[in-house]
Length: 323
Image (cartoon, rainbow, N blue to C red; front, side, top):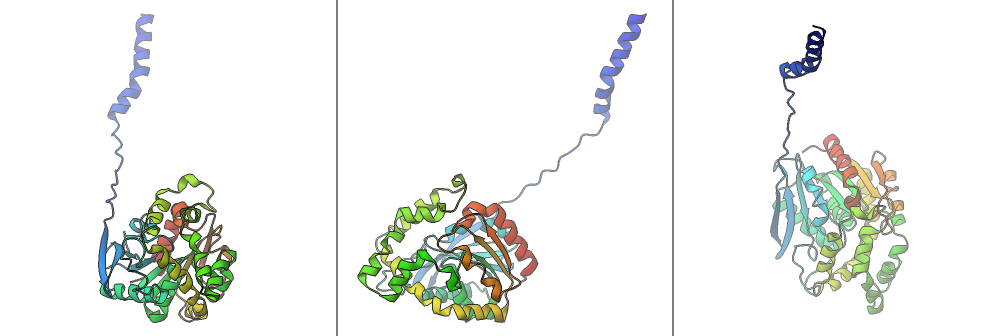
């Protein structure tokens, strides 16, 4: 009898939880599927030149214009575009001589920042974009700021990433380039040839980065292949010289900041030797309400800090930018 009672007790202990588990309703985990954003790769003819651009997002969304730096192209925004295109109409062109755009012979085409601004302006007009926030980086800063001088009323906001508008930000790296501005000779021009070689291209992606495993080598392989195209070296040397025309416009850029006070987010790789941290702080003099974030990385901050930058950028646009 005792053995029977013990068996019944063990059965009660063993099977009660199982009975409860069977009786309890199964918990269902919601599975959320995110539909991948479609990025369109298009070309528009501007002044007889095929200008490539990436486009994504709702056609009726607020426009965000992404303006790339040297020596890359809209390729630098390939990971950012899908993260903004859920709500924003994103447009990222390649300047002539860069990326997938045409690269006419430098003796037949004016490779100047003023010309680039005019061509971006024509592209935006063709796409019907009459108001836009601008992400400006490196060369994209003078292109974008020249565009802002042409149409200040169209700029709904600025995202500034290692792009200069103050002489304080032009330090030692720029000394050989400044020498070329001062004296346009073959010797001074050829002295800048080392700026278009693989070692320098790789340096721009890796210098100032703590964890190099975060940087895809595809970046410098892609950019260098385009730099090495026949005739492209002369295109880049023309642009190095013309960059000197941007510096006299800095006071006008700064006046635009003061007069128009566009909402501004500054996300700056503080370890950059090309556009160092010193170039970021003066923006606050003319844009005291700008939001400044200094990131522990180098020149191409998006390659290293996209996980930090994308939320900052999207939040800024959500708060500050309307159609």
